[in-house]
Image (tube, rainbow, N blue to C red; front, side, top):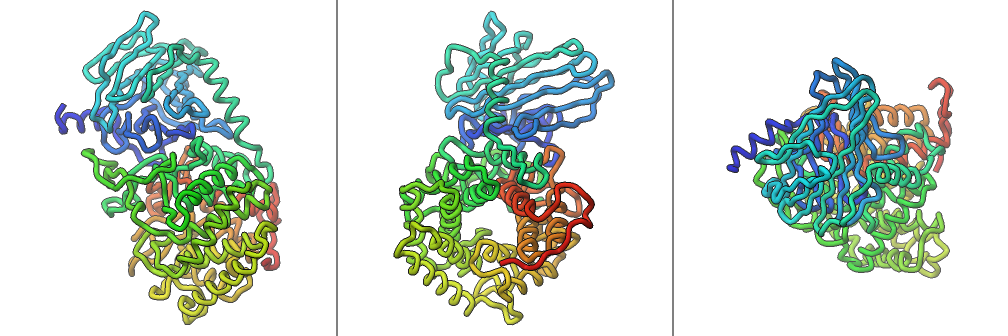
Length: 604
């Protein structure tokens, strides 16, 4: 097939939709993106950072869809506390659903994709289209064979495939297709297995696989009844768990190259584990009292620090390997975006990763979840700060190397946090002294003439990241620099209840980039720390409402068009949503009118 034929094929069968209409299935080892036509448009196998088998999301050929034959309007929902999604279509003749999930917890080498088509009201008529194309479209469905029991087997490049429940499918040039009639109240199961190894002889029984997946999610996601909006908090926890591999590594998002702003060149591969994001997730879990995600984060960060020490990379593959160099694929990309895999973060130094690691370890220590190896890793992170805190780094936003204020202050916060541990012993005084030195030095070079923090010694601008260090204990809540920074940020980098990272240029904030959802939740935490509880609640609700119908957050929210921008689901946004939900719950009533919430005095 020529490139033109391949591109047209993908565009015709699985056209792109706005990001807010996509749901994501995840089992810890990989994720699948599901569109409103019941189309699986993204799935990398066997791992998060493997080549895609279905890549229509970025213009690749092939996909896997279950779509009503009648006219329909779309909807859907997740089962609470899970990544089990129901595509739901109201048709001219009734209601059809497709319950879908990746069997959970996922196996490292084998994907099991479960799809159960249900005739909820009236009979259901659907078309099923199955066209796997491994290697981002390079490999077709070869060696196809339909067995007597109706199961299909074959290959797509190096991958082994088995598809059951499709006995009526007819093979075409590029895959299989059939129409399915289901009587009212009935259902039909489809099970797809993909592996980079020989598949086991036995096939999954759909009933057993569904029950095991449902039970596993019930055991994994805690009640979180100490959080605001418990259902939403459990949604974010499930997302974070779904993005977390057996190694403990949590990818930043399930996708690559989805644009933060159309034609702006900000397209990145987020299928890797950022140390910072991992620490955010662990600290959010600690704030809720849930230990599973905290333990995962500590385990992954511990291993990387013990292996690399002061040369810790900002990001790794889910198996702890090096992130590959960034390069382009021969695909059109999502409209307005690009087609990149790999990430240039592998060439960066990010100082704040050491500070965030210390904050993570301190949270684990307070929860009595820190073992000897992890304390050794904490000591290694502290030593790295001793050796490298004066070096310029790429910072939280991964821009140019500067002495970023946020990076330095987060290191001070981490040092203060671990110094409070009983394990610190004689190191405590040294770490506290270094924290004081870092804050003093940074204050001497990066406090704006107005009294607030500025981005760096050479950049006088404001930045949403500057709200984080007081939250983590680098300086106190009542420090004049804390209050001045928050007040100026609210005046200059927020608009209409939405928060932005920093000012790019003289344009309106929303013209340069979308509202940064991470910053929205950080504002809520910062206001809460100041005792401005009602304002904190408003920011929490405003930012929480930026999710799409499947209740997933991306990195940015286009305020003008009310659309999601960037890769999804964005792990660090879900992490801060979870932390904010837990933090605000202590001071906000679960029921009642907003005027029951009163402002409280400042807390340090």
